[in-house]
Amino acid sequence: MPRVVRTPAELRAALRGQPSVGLVPTMGYLHTGHATLIRAARAENAVVVLSVFVNPMQFGPKEDLARYPRDLDRDLRVAAEAGADLLFVPEAGDMYPTGFSTRVELSGVSEPLDGAARPGHFTGVATVVLKLLNLVQPARAYFGEKDWQQLAVVRRMVADLNVPVEVVGVPTVRAESGLALSSRNAYLSAEELERATVLSRALRAVQAAYAGGERDAARLRQAGLDVLATEPEAVPDYLAVVDGDMRERDAVDDDPMNRVLVAARMFGVRLIDNMPLDARQHPGGQHPGDQHPGEL
Ligand SMILES: Nc1ncnc2c1ncn2[C@@H]1O[C@H](COP(=O)(O)OP(=O)(O)OP(=O)(O)O)[C@@H](O)[C@H]1O
Ligand SMILES: CC(C)(CO)[C@@H](O)C(=O)[O-]
Ligand code: BAL
Image 1 (tube, rainbow, N blue to C red):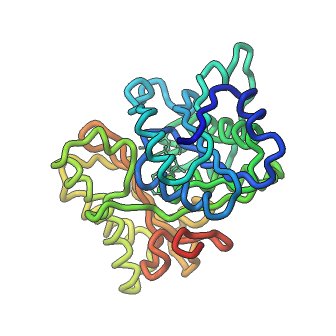
Image 2: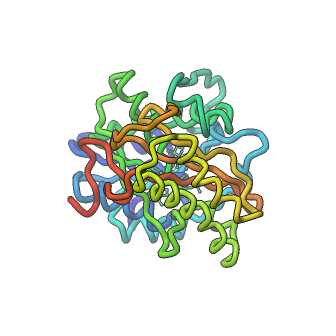
């Protein structure tokens, strides 16, 4: 079993002198998506650290912080099987002690989409990710493409602040139904999970329109919205076609960084997903220089 450390001081002591560390930041309740990130880190680093921290700073006052699923025993089993060496499981008071006053706030990539729908969310993400990077000082840090805008925010912060880490994006792991794996799927019943496949079906409809030659962003978007409209339980927050900087344009070009992103509320749960416009790309799309599990 991986060792569990609880405080920043214990973590630093455990990692002293380790030359090649891979960090996988998570909020726990691990699934195969997380295991894929851990395995990618295992293949490239001498030591793999998994953080499990439901970060209060990235939740809005009306969001699901209190009911977010937590199960450390299950997390330990998944982490062990995937090859993590160390689990960092801090308390909120260890990460944000009395007097904590710093915020890492990005403009640009963090503003639209989830940034607009969840005010303050990416400030919370950037702040905790920078703290984790400073605590662990990893050579590489692994993030899922399922949270595509988050990945863009982390890349921007790391570049802007000269953080000495390689950010590795890992393609989205999906259920056979097409549904992106997500800890929040645990809130849904089997029937609701089946109906939540409307998100990936909407994204595929946009890909199909793009493959058919459509380059008008509004018409591409409409192809996805038409599919979402077939599911009365899906209340979209957004469905957007964006470039690598999360900007919507009137007409799209063939840049492989172009993506379609969706967020919708279904059955009281907020779900997100995204795909590259060009379905012939790697299933999850890729950033130049990224490593993918299948290629390691
Ligand atoms: N299906 C997936 N495929 C690949 N990576 C994933 C997948 N789901 C989550 N991740 C990645 O795992 C990391 C930790 O994510 P997190 O713990 O929030 O899990 P989650 O399933 O995204 O949870 P939530 O339901 O809160 O969105 C993030 O980098 C995230 O992008
Ligand atoms: C990156 C992260 C662990 C920061 O709390 C979280 O946003 C997540 O799990 O994607
Ligand atoms: N996976 C992103 C974390 C969040 O929704 O807060």
